[in-house]
Structures are given as C-alpha cells and as structure tokens.
Length: 292
View 1 (cartoon, rainbow, N blue to C red):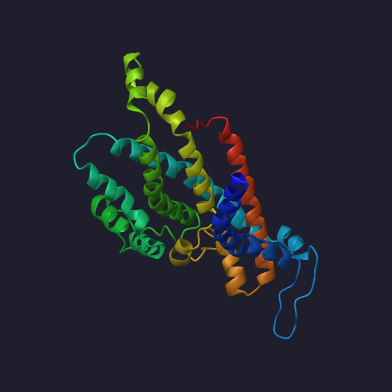
View 2 (cartoon, rainbow, N blue to C red):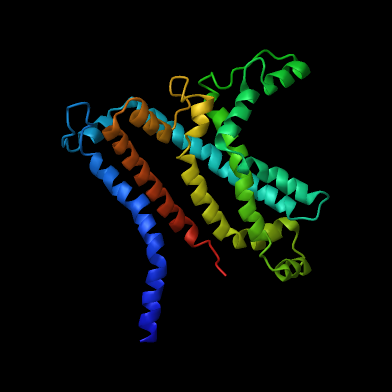
C-alpha cells in the first residue's frame, strides 16, 4: 500500500512537467509531421492531402541539398572546435593562476550576451573597410579591404567563428564543474606512480569527463542545427545560400515565402536527423562513459 501511494505521488509530481512537455514538444512534432502530407492553404484555396508530394519536392530541391551540405560542414567545423576549446579553457581556469575569477568571467561573458547582440558585435568586426579586422590588418600589414561575409568562400567560415566564440564559454562551465568533482586522491595516486601530466589527463581525467562530454556533444549538435539569429543579422543566408543553414531555410520557407506545408516537411527531416544523431551519440559514447 505504501509503495502504491509513493507511485501515485511520484506521478502527481511528474504530471505538470509531462503536460508541458507533450503540449509544447510532442504534440507540435506530431502536428508538423501530419501537415507535411498536405498542401499550403492560400486565400480561399484550402489545404488538401497531397501524400508524399512534399517529400518528392524536397528530394528535387537543389537549395535543400545546398543548405544541408552547409549545415553538415557547419557542424563538423563548430562541434569539435568549440568542445576542444572549452575543455582547454576549463583545464586552465581550474588551475591556480592569478586573476582566475576574472579569466573565468571573461570566458563566460559571450554566453550571457543576447544572440542578436553577438551578431551585431561581429558584424562590426567583419564590416569591410571600417570593421575591426580590416582596421587592424590595414594598420599592421597594409592589407586591402576584405569582405568575409560577402564572399561565398568565407561567409560560412565567418559564421562558424562567431558560433565557436559564443558557445565555447558555455561548454567550459560544464567541464569546469566536472573537473572540480574529480577526487584529488586519484590525481595524487597517479603522480605517485610516476605518471606525467599528459598521461594523467588521458588515463584519469578525460575518462572521468566522458559523461560531461556526452552531454556537451549532444547540446553542440542540437545548437549546430538550430542557428537562425546570427544568419539573420550577419549574412541573411547569402551570398547565393553560401551560408544558409537548414533551420534558416525552414524559417524563410515558412515566414518569407509562406509555404508552411513544405516548411513542415523540412522540419520533419530536421527532427529525424537530430534524433538519429542524438541516438548515435549515446550508442557511440555509452561504452566509454564512466558514471559514478
């Protein structure tokens, strides 16, 4: 009887969160999947069932394949870079150094800035002729003006730099918290055995950080596929979709071209990709994660 009361009490505590989760996450996902099989209602023309026509259109859409390729390169460029920089920063600020609190604050500051503010800051950095980068390169090297955001070869890379600068400090906080939970006795025992700093990191510290690495990597993957704000301010997806990403393309399709049915189809593909990537990450890291 006592166990049954505890079971009921537990479900009562979970019910509010479950209601919000299903209302704002699962039900919209199901509705989006359903809408992907219909046409977009326009004026007096009602939405009609079209089957897999939207998915056939997606397969023949060159812009979709372009933004998907951009997004994959964007993920490859930002995820390992931001995680590696975050880990290095966490290891450094975890040591005893002068002004450690100030350094931690400096690393974390980009995280608390609004995304639009970050994009505008870097827009000033990248502005040809008047931007900070051109001012410095012109003063030191006499270099000519460069247009990082207007060049198809550099636009996506420029957005990657902004993303890494924004996210590395956020991931650093999780690594720093994880480093502070490692028992000092383990590190001391490794030193007594004659292990160097590099061996201690790879054999002791890094394996204990794997749960944090799993959490951070899942968040990094999700973040790499949901970028809109920076693109809206920096490049608008241009030039010629050179910096456009999948979620930005969904935004344009739904709210600029008002093709909500096709946007729903694109969203289904995005959700499926994120689900597969998240599941794959769990299976990939599961054998290497050491939980306490």
